[in-house]
Each structure stands twice: as structure tokens, then as C-alpha cells.
Amino acid sequence: MIERFRDRTEGGQRLASLLRRYAGRDDVIVLALPRGGLPVADEVARALDAPLDVFIVRKLGVPWQEELAMGALASGGIRFVNQEVVDMYGIGAEDVERATGEQQVELERREKLYRGDRPPPDLAGKTVILVDDGLATGSSMRAAVNAVRTQRPSVVVVAVPVAAPETCELFRTIADDVVCAMTPEPFQAVGLWYQDFTQTTDDEVREILGESRLRALRP
Image (cartoon, rainbow, N blue to C red; front, top):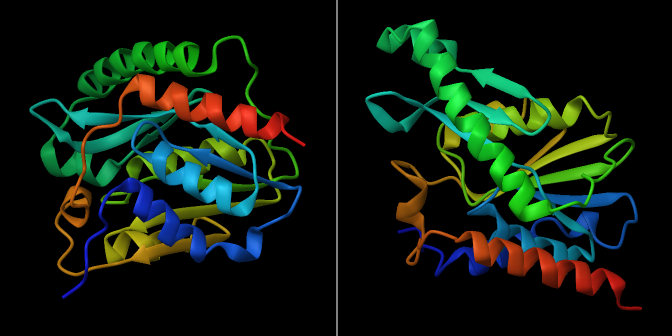
């Protein structure tokens, strides 16, 4: 039987051990998908001695089943729509646009809350490691990869503690490198693979980012 992670911190530590080839490089930046990706990405950034920042992605939920993603919206105005889900459930264009408008408001709120007046990092020529706490359908991460690509990084890495096997394999065709610490089957849901999957709060996100900035200032 596959052993579950104690919490996101342990998930990040185990994930970091698989990313050691990126340690100590000045071209690496770790971007977390908030909120659940922050505690994971913080452990990765610490282990690799790399800067940490956020890359905000909002899931576009099916109107009558919000947990089911029909797409995602990411920083930079990038939208990914999973046409397969839209067609399967007969979702109209007006429903997609309504969900987009609602999530755009929340995305902008989080950008302001987490980043304040700080500009987003320059990703051109960088090795960008995108981190979340897990991949189910992968809609949010796919939107993040597409958005990051527009900023011309040299390498895009997708890294998560746990993922559905087929989703992990899918990202091998999208990203330059993919690291999934666990790909259990049957998968069912990300939260099942953590003993503690308590929701990460906005205050915790800000605290982690603040500590990361302080680390970067130390000699």
C-alpha cells in the first residue's frame, strides 16, 4: 500500500529530493500555484536555494459541479478551456464566459493581496519550476504552463507530490520536464493522499512569501 504524505510540507520535502539536479543554479525560479501549492513550493525553493514566487491560476468550475474543472484562468490573461469536458456536459459559451468573469475578479484580488506593488518576476531565459500540491485533471497547471510559455523561459518544469498517472503522462508532452513523486492508482482525488489536507489560507500564503523574501536578502 502506498503511504500518504503527512501534510503538504512533507510532500514538498519528498518532491524536493527528486529535483536536486536543479539545486544551486542562478537561472532557476520556483513558482507556486496558490494556495495549496505554496507550502509544497516553499520546501522545494529552500532545498534548491532558489527564489520563490506565486503564479495565480483560477479553476473554471462546471456551473452545477464546481469541483469539476472545465478550464482555468491564469495570470497574464491566459485561459484554457477543456473542450472535452464542455462538450461532454453540454456547457454553453455563456456559462464559460460567466465563470471566466467571476474568476477574473478573484484572480485580480489575489494578485493584489499576495504581490502588493511588487512586479511579477521576469521569466525570460529562466528555468521555471511550477509547483502544486497535486494534479487531478491538470486544468490549472495546463493554464499555468501556457501562460508561462508566453514569457519565453528556457525550460518549464512541472513538479507535484502526487498526480493521476494519466495526467502526469500528459504533461510530458506539454512541459520540458515533469516530476510526480507519486502516481497512485486508483487515484480518485489529490486530498486522499495527504493525512492533513487543510486548506491553505491567504495569511499563510503571505507569511510564506514574506519569509522567502527575507531569506533572499540574507547573505
